[in-house]
Image 1 (cartoon, rainbow, N blue to C red):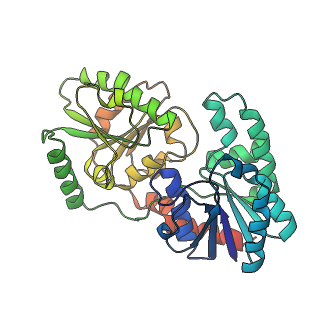
Image 2 (tube, rainbow, N blue to C red):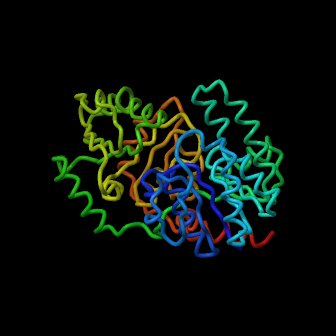
Length: 369
């Protein structure tokens, strides 16, 4: 099996959850197959681990409709004896199907959201046209990968896909045991000193890229609803740490009690290891929320809206994940309860979310058909 991954945007070096989703899947998937990634020039080939990157496609919106890409990629497929073409997202579907039909490669469509419905929740009028196109692309594929069972079941029902052509390949983490207690304690001490936080405070974390509207709105929910409610709860001492790039200046510069805007930090793992509760008040957008997966994997407890927890089964979490409704009813109270809950992230969680297991399952699925 020789796979060509087709990626239409920047993923290397991988910084955001969406970028890591592809880069790390390829890292572990390449242990089971020969893999080359064809992508845009903005990608850094040196940042790839375990696979080759050909950053030969010009950046810019015209790349999505340039028919000359067909001839370039067809030559690579023929020269390298490519057997499978993996398409990330449906946008280059026309190109992937053209290559499938003229070279004989088997097409894998790797869905990261149901894109049509995601854009619908973001209020885009053209979502239905994209949905129809997305459906057509998926129906051409021999294999369809989805980030969570909810998306897979949606596609079976609405795209009319065959069940034996569909697999859930969730977002993953690169470790398969929780951090040691001493490691978490050291991280906590670092955060207390770094941000001048009293030692008795519970540390609450919200992390994401704030140029993405659902994350930005989640931050506004914390500022306008969750933090004021926590302030009214007697006997609960806490600090909320906000990490991530592109926090608007008017929010980061505001004087909000018990909130610290750390912004983009060089090592976010320290924050995951040192904090007590991950806040996930996201109510829009689609797909699995990658930071929630990482937080639970680092041993944190988490409180999430229903939307924000899609793709993460509480049954795998040993009581460490509390889900509230998307109107944030009971969210502050759940935070207080989570801050006092003491349990380990169980082995079942890592069996499901470890990248090595995910990639192995995907390789076996392809080999078995």
